[in-house]
Image (cartoon, rainbow, N blue to C red):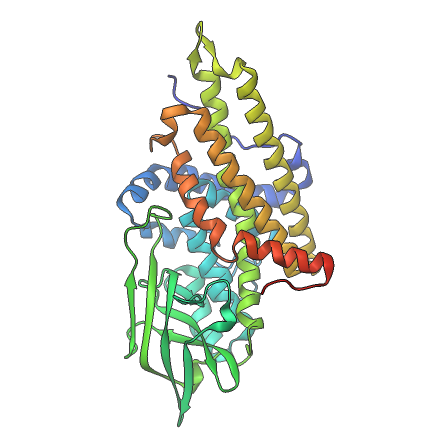
Length: 392
């Protein structure tokens, strides 16, 4: 077979006409970075189970970390521009988008929103340029979808907080310079900035993953871990704090997975044109193949429109958490479906890592689960539609 052409974008419904010149420039910058710097190495990273840390500084210089935040060196982009960056990064690999999403939405955003001036000055500039890495510790071994049941506790002793508990499935946990950890206190759930190397704090990498292999995933453990009073985020109290961070990250996921779907669709589309079968005709000439491609491009287009509208609403200050639930739930689901249909169109070749499809499919199964499962987001949407909560 001939070598497949370079990616030129997926735009069936002329959605590019809805973007400004600046938005298109941001997307092109991220796309070129992915083409030049990420795609040449990402397959080997996934094979070897490692993250391309040599790219962190470059992403910092390009303004990817905290791109839609203001101050402390952040790019101050619109939320649509930020979404387009997430889309292009996840077209390469979900692990790359997850890294940037955690750094910006789950660490920088809460420090900027809930942190003290001292915490902002100490961490945000270094996180923005990639000199320091962060992680977000909310999920526990026994509590994922129900964060209110968390068992990690923090108690006050003199001028210190003493933390005990465990967190798991933490992106970048074992490589982060600072962990934003949520714990139950006598005054409600609070967030703490805990530096790597603090006595009583240990992090260990989770191995054996068949998904998100180009990403560092860890468990965190706290045993009589003592931190100063200044480590607590003063502006966050209760579950509203961590959930607001997750809303920021889920917004990026809703955009990012479109990139994975695009890459799978475009790979399958080009393959179907090049692949000859039955009297030396391209398999694209068969009705069943065209039906699958038609279904994929329709779902991708709908996902693009949903993401764009949510981005515009967010820039207007009108986007609600329940809106983000629909964005995340729908777009992840169609991306998983596109990956599966694309694998089917490539036949046996679909399972080979010469093509990106199986890697995306494996990654997307994780993306469907983390930061709110498909089922939990369905219940969020259901509560918004009926006014009745059905979580228990």
